[in-house]
Image 1 (cartoon, one colour):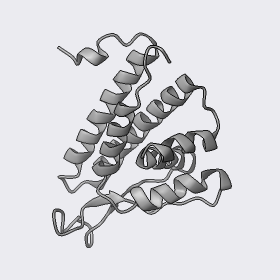
Image 2: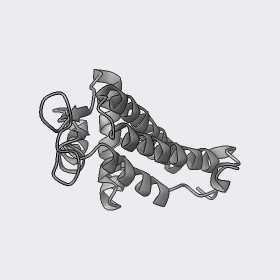
Image 3: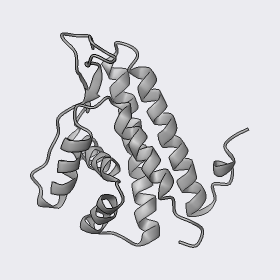
Image 4: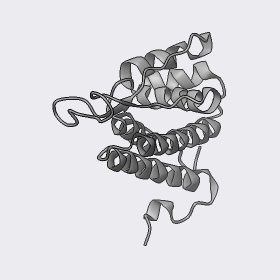
Length: 169
């Protein structure tokens, strides 16, 4: 039997709950992919994670009637949602610039040093000079870049879970 929060996915609240579960599963799949030596698998799972983040972003801000990037960034920044905002920015890079975000943090072809001593599959460097995305670019640099792939996804999952729209929204 499934999660009671996602059993009824009619309407915005149910769809959002399903999106939260999708992001949780995507982050788990990223973590499993990072245990291996296949960066393509890790990159594919990150791709799915970014789309789950974006779906939640769209659902949340549509339910709140906030369309502007600046207005959305104000919400992210005021509520410790910088990692979520940064991943929305990364999803734009993936979709519009075809950026692959998984990178090796070790030496050579394998993520040597995976574990408490560093290395592993990490978020790649990425930035934008577009004025509208300056804040999200900075958040990406400060909250996502060079971290283990699952960490920012887990942060975004927790943030979206805390900020789920209610049936009164």
